[in-house]
Length: 239
Picture 1 (tube, rainbow, N blue to C red):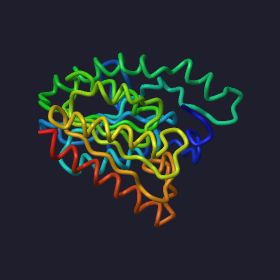
Picture 2: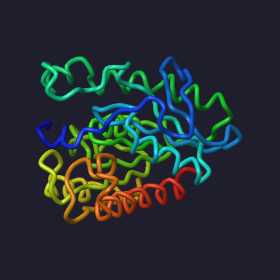
Picture 3: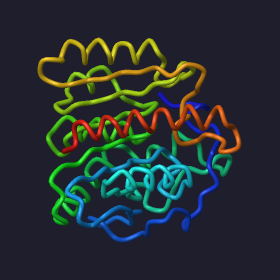
């Protein structure tokens, strides 16, 4: 469920990137942006590289510009995965289980709601998609988007109770198209209870929505298409 693709194209982390700011939200350092008067929020759950990834913060700023209050918590507690640093990804995951992050997300959501927010969407990337799908199993949130998910199972999708979109990649060894199509079958079968949407992006690999090369116009275009699909999903169901 995790492998080389999970860590491909690591970002250069930058704690000062983005036009928002970092504050404590529900006990976690959190990058936030957007109008404090908005009634709608989006929670972004990072991949293994954490909340200081420039492309992730750039996406948060884009979502904020669309009218949402955006929160990107540091679910990794200042300990993002560092490739080739003497700790394997498997060992890192033992210290950073998605179940722990799910529990940490609850007070963050409460803190967001305390600001007067009435509806919340959650998007999870790779590792973070498992957290987002767990939130979608109960009414912690109003909608979810899972982008090139890791660890997400068919049983997870069967249990979602809010509108859920899955954006997958053609070249993904972690959530290959065959698995994503199973997700689609489950969501289609649940369509009378829960709205679902599944899209497999051609010619892209796991991680493409946040770990793209900003100098590669084709990669940027593919990422931006996924970002737009995500925004459209939240505009429709987070209201």
